[in-house]
Length: 325
Ligand SMILES: Nc1ncnc2c1ncn2[C@@H]1O[C@H](COP(=O)(O)OP(=O)(O)OP(=O)(O)O)[C@@H](O)[C@H]1O
Ligand SMILES: [Mg+2]
Image 1 (spheres, rainbow, N blue to C red):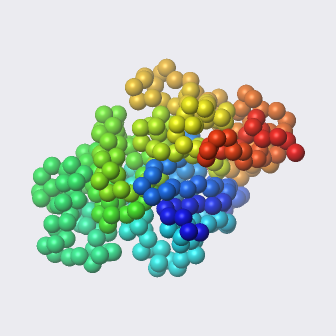
Image 2: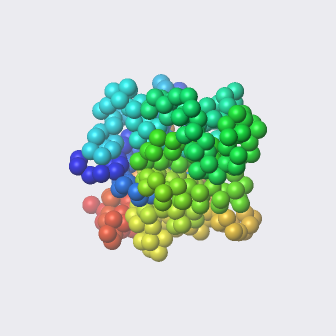
Image 3: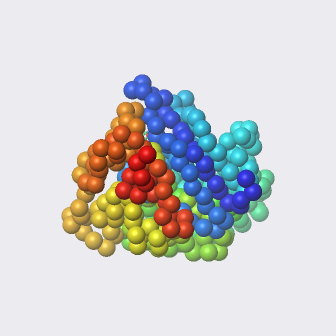
């Protein structure tokens, strides 16, 4: 594998629970070339976070296990590295921003200490130079008076500021890839928009690639180059943003485009997709969306649809496009 950037192939991660084996991530493949942004979208519970955790090798233990696949970063398969080598990747080459800043920040440690943590760990910088670096990082994410704020505790900051602090820590060692897992879900709408434009500005400056996860498909066009739509552990459609938004192929993608909340619309006016996600421990052989799909026929529940190429890199897994054998 000589390609630059991130290439994920057939990544399969299961959760072995009391209720059986949940196929949370079931053979997903995608690529993020350097400096590009891929949006990963899908309803709550579709496996987006598990996919990130799997590729960072941070699945919940002991339930979560990677059972198949490859995760290449600049030609190195991360799944073959030792845990020690993987620690060098996390925070330095690939960094993460999670949904809820309170879970990424330790409530009893000062902000400055936490922003400086990756620099201390990976670059062994200490004392005055570390302090200067931390102040600069906080300034970069637009925290006013960073010299004073380094001594604050997380609860003394607003939600938006806390999430910017998490961003500062994530970008501290200039990672080549940032995984942003619903980074704005806990923020209110105006703060959300501000955060997203800050993220884009930082990406322009620092040129990192990004895996941007959201359940709001309408955030994708302004932020992403490509999009992958995930449903019940599988990617059902992916391609360049232009192609997927102009010609959405999968009935699930179309339903998401009709149903997902738009930031500029009142929530009440939304259509929702009838039905719910199937249980990940009791999946049949067919398309996982079949039970909710108005276009479904018998073949859809009998066999999983083939991966069909439409135009350029636009691909879909749906019997409307593939021919039954
Ligand atoms: N720690 C865990 N132990 C067992 N099962 C889990 C755990 N975390 C998540 N799951 C299950 O894994 C499946 C995928 O969850 P995941 O968190 O990846 O969804 P998601 O797409 O990120 O949803 P959301 O948009 O709500 O964040 C779900 O069925 C969920 O119940
Ligand atoms: Mg999630």
